[in-house]
Structures are given as C-alpha cells and as structure tokens.
Image 1 (spheres, rainbow, N blue to C red):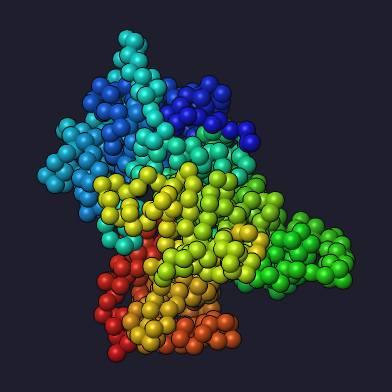
Image 2: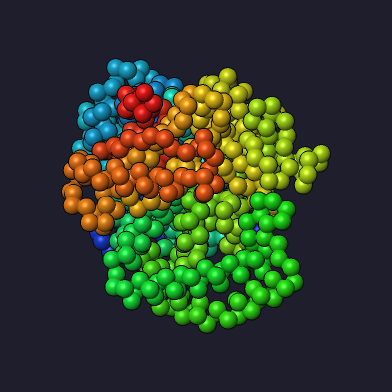
Length: 636
C-alpha cells in the first residue's frame, strides 16, 4: 500500500491530514511571479471548521446540495472543505458557467445556498434571481470584491464561525460523525456535450475507493501544479490524492503556466492532451527555426533515443500488442536488441544531457510524471514526450466513475494504451449492437482480446446514478455495470486501448460506420491545422471543418496577423487540401469511405464554453448547429 491516509469519508480526510501534516503547506496561491501564499494543512482544516460552523448556523442541512461556482483558487478548497465538514454535498462548476447552465443547475439541484467567485458572476446571478426560486443565500469568495446587498462575504462567515467555535459550538464535528459512506460527496453536472447536463452523484465511498486503488505514487515532498479545472473530477481526485499524501498543490492557470513551470518546478501534475499537443508544436517550431547544426543534432539525438527506447520496450515486453504475434521477439532478435541497446547506451546518455535535458527544463526540469486525461493522447505526441524523458502516463475514466478506471504507471508503461484497469475494477468489452460480451469470453480466441466493442465497467468507483433522472440512470447502469459509451479493446498486454466514442460514430448513407476521432487526431498533428471536426452523418462521404494554425502558416512564410487575413490568401486552402490528402489516405490505413471529400475553413477557433468543454472536448451538437449552413454546403 502507498503511504496515504485512508479515511472513512472525505470530511475525515481533512482532519486526519491536519493531524499528520500540521503546518506543512497543503496549497499555494500565486501572488506574484515568484511569490506564493501558503495554506497549511492545519489552517485548511481549522478554517474549514469555522466556515462549516457558520454554514450550519446559516441553515445548511446535512446531505443538502450547496453550489460552488468558481475556478481554481484557495477559497475554492476552503469552501469545498467546509461543505464536507458540515455533512453536505457541493455542486461545483466553473466561473464561466453560462446563464442557461447556471439556471438549470441551481434549479435542478435545488440549491438554496451558493458560493460564487467574482463580481462578474455576482452580477449575473443577481440578474437571474427571478428564475431561481430556491436560492436563498449567496456567498462571495473574492476578498477584493464588494458584495452586493444581500450577498454574504466569505471572510465574514469565517470570522462568525470562529466566534461560534470559541463559544463552544461543535455542530460540525457531530455532522462529520454522522456521514455515511453512501452519502453524496459531490454532485457534478456533466459538461453538456449532448444537451442539458446530467447531475452525476458521487459518494464518499466512491472517492475513498480511488484513494485505495489509484496506482500513482505521490510523496509528501512532491510539488503538484494544478492547471485543469478543479470542479472537474479528474483534477479534483488528484488534489484529494495530494491531501492524503501530504503533498503541496500550486494553483496555476494557462496564462501563467509557462512561468509557473519554471518557478515551481513541479514533480507531478494532471494534464489534458491539448497541453502536450501545444507544447509539441512549440518545440518543433523552435527546432525548425534553429540553425542547421542544432536541427541535425536534435534529429540525431531523437533517433538515438527512440531506437534505444524501442529496444528497451521490446526486451521488457512493453511493446503494444494488438494481436497475438505483436511485440514477440525470438532469441536472435533478442540478442540483436541487447546489442543495439548496449551500443546506443553512451550515445543515449550524451543525447539526454546535451539535448533533452534543456527541453525538460521548459517544464521545470523536475517532472517525475504527468497523468494525461480527459481525451485521447495522439500516438505521435505520446511517443515524443516519453522518448525525450517526460513521462506522460495516459489515464482513462469518466465523471461517472470518480473518474479513474485505468492508468499507466512508470514501471510498466505500454505506449498506445491507457494501462490496465486499476484494482477492484471489472472490465467487459461488449458488442455495441447486441450487448453480448466480447471480452472476457472463453468461447472466443484469446478470450476476445484485440476485438473492439463498448467498454463496460463495474467497481466501487461507479456513480450512484444521475440526480433526479431515473431514466438516464437505467440506460447506463444495469446490475452494477456501467456502459461508458466508449469504444475500446483489451490488448494482448491486458491493457485498455480507447478507440473512440460509440455516440460519435458517423453513419454514412451507404451504411458505413466510421469514427471521427482518429481522423481528427491525425489532422490536428499537422502544424498547419489548429482544430478540426469531421462531419457527414447520413451523407455519401465525410467532410471536415478546419481552423487553420496561424502560427504554423506564419512559420511557413505566410504574412498574416489574423485568421481572417490568412484566409484571404488562396494558397492557404491549397496547402490545407494537401495536408488532408497526405494524412488521410488509403496508404495510411484509411478505408475509401473514410477519405475526406470536402472541407471548409473557419476564421474563428473553437472556444471553451462555446464549442469546447473545459477539458477541450468538442461539443459536436453545438458545432453542428452553429455551422449548419456551412456544413450543408459541403454536401450540395
């Protein structure tokens, strides 16, 4: 077992962490470029108790839903701690929640009391008060903002709670003792890629099971950089994991990330594929602009490192095995790889010292690992960072599964997979149409390994259900088995490989089914393509919407200061067409009906909160509606 705290519930976690880690910093908030304000484990718990006491006096009931609309910041974790300590469940969402989402969530979750982050959100919420009949009290987190009439201030509530506790109030402790494992810890509304968000009910038992089974090793000396939205369960579970291990979490954001990586020198962080895609493109652009000697040095160093790693993976049986013969080597080949590894060893160490160490310094130079989740990591990028010594451990899960179902670990990384299912997690691969079990199926060759189907799981991390939505719950939960809606297979390494979404499948008028994700992933790796989305449901062929990469074209000598200006150049369309034909071709393994027959260029990138979720997933229905006429023009 790892050196972690294993609490009975999440409220108890804060108390046990305060006892064990005391004045050690739990969280750091950025005040200046190299100035961080610490919040110790003892301060977190004691301040949380004070705020919980005030919330109870305010009328928060045990097992009540409390709104928490804010982004990553110290006050977020204080509010979250307080809600747990008074036996309630929080309903978190980012500060950029739309008015429609805000109205829906507050009313559907029957929220009476809500924390809000800023003056902007305060004004928006107050303007919606007539549409929020249940909402009674609003608490402002930002110290620098003056609360409007009737709005409470976080600091005032904390002070009130401290006064009550000095007079002997211990209601919060009674609430902690009364928490049951099946009580809600949080109610998270999904990002709404397919319409109204659903409220995912996660219990204390769900989250505690993750502490017991996630095989990622974190120590109290680790520095963790928090850049993903904390309201999302992927980032949140790693912050909870950090608390259980006594590590320190630094709150960062995309704007300050480059500086924070160099200042904090993190040893671990949760991340999304988009971060590594952007960093990969930046590195390649820097190399392309370097003098010829430096370009040749990088190419030679990368070739040495890739060959060295390939031999290492083969010798350690860590090569991706999609069928029974993949990755197997005979005695002669084994000797050849031993010899190649031995001969390349000094060159590999020199390459690492002269080339890759400098690249790693761009992410602080101390990163032991990062877990990438929230979307598929392109294979080329996965290979690249693991080759240059930045271990990217891809994981897999959903909000409905708390979230981790599978994750790679340093000692047994199989690039191209999301690793094996974590302990206590049962996995099935089922036929999408019939629901019949493909894996594990003793009647099929190799029990069904290497055969694609829908991933279904059962385990202690699976949600209680969707809040006030029995029909949707019954659609995905049957006999404890959760239908993920994801296509995948179990490889011959006994790891999960994700192949796309069942619901994303495009069905052409000829009856052919295809997955857009692999095509989009390949196109997005082009330095000339920033974003894209494949379309073509019920059409004879597929098309694609493309947002060109302005920087990529500028590096190729195109003079333009904006996408609008770039698209005035007719050569841009020709270059994009060439990229599409070269990448999505029969020669690259695509079937004829998967080839792109038409495309349209967009002058606006997809934006978070509009066409993208907070984890940069496409809201396909939003894009379909927004560009309906443009999409139709492709198929006329």
